[in-house]
Length: 440
Ligand SMILES: Cc1cc2nc3c(=O)[nH]c(=O)nc-3n(C[C@H](O)[C@H](O)[C@H](O)COP(=O)(O)OP(=O)(O)OC[C@H]3O[C@@H](n4cnc5c(N)ncnc54)[C@H](O)[C@@H]3O)c2cc1C
Image (cartoon, rainbow, N blue to C red; front, side, top):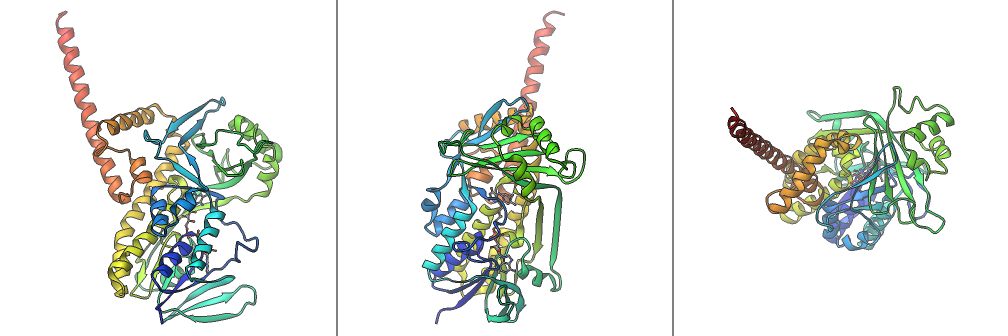
């Protein structure tokens, strides 16, 4: 009989991990709190669409699913910056047209992974909420019958998201570190419908941003010709969710701040009234595993704020890393989990910092002359030294260099650029001195 592995959560990471494990011949049982999204409407969770890039694509490739997922992705070649006067400017992500983000539907991607998991022999138990862990067993509550039972679970993978029950059980153990932070900003999803002919109303192949320093609106394209917009705004303050009390407040705010978007949002007021404001949390914890019995992956151990578009990509990268460790080290599960956590934890810590920093960049710095000059310098240097110079964004988004290493390489590049600029400045000063001394 094959060895059993129990996965908590059939979200993005849980279902991809289940596919990889089943393909290795394990008996994989998945317990998912929600109903089956292929058959019944379920709460749609977070964002409707997501930016998928190199790291996520690599992990999907390990499961043989890369091309299938890409077939329903929309390439986004750059950021389309919308200024207050309605002007737009496309900032390309890369000088290589092959390097772009892909806008994918969270629902369709999750459905594809559930189908593939079942095809590979995974058994998925829906409406089964994990409550906690006992030695060799997982306690689950059936949300329909309210019956609680304990299932045989010699090895458990907690992929049950930012509010993980498996992690909550680990938190009660000695020397478990846990940090949870909320931003003062929340987000609300809004909608730009397709044109009458089914085409997009604004440029299709870009991630649109309306940066307004303390807040911003972004929009990602969907296959049906619509865009999903997300408004990131402080909870409190003069320009905040709290300040937008009436329909008139909402219309006035949007017309003043995002005039060219409002023109394409006929249901703005209804959508604003109807859609919830969600919070933004980031989580760090350690250790990621308990002996050879339980390990965490995805948001359960490293939820990040969404501003680098890397949460899912990193969760998928966890799956590929764990799969690699299983390949090399199973059945020594203690070693498998230790090696996996050692590979991933410093890097997802680096990603958490990067994601916070990118919020400042997205909502304001993208229009600053200094940022644009640095981007230009990075592009030129990358063209001159393609094997040695890449911008931090390129390393994070279009390479698989570990996140912490990408940060370190970018720091060294910035130092070199600073020194070169300083040397250039000295050279100019020297020339100026020679020139002016002639006229003494
Ligand atoms: C607004 C927003 C935009 C984002 N955009 C991007 C983006 O563009 N690109 C990107 O890479 N990432 C993005 N992310 C991050 C991405 O959504 C997450 O990193 C990703 O969903 C993590 O996958 P996961 O499987 O770990 O968790 P989840 O997708 O949250 O899945 C967890 C699963 O566990 C289930 N579950 C929860 N509790 C239990 C329980 N007790 N028992 C059983 N099952 C349970 C849930 O129902 C769910 O199915 C964004 C996030 C937000 C909030």
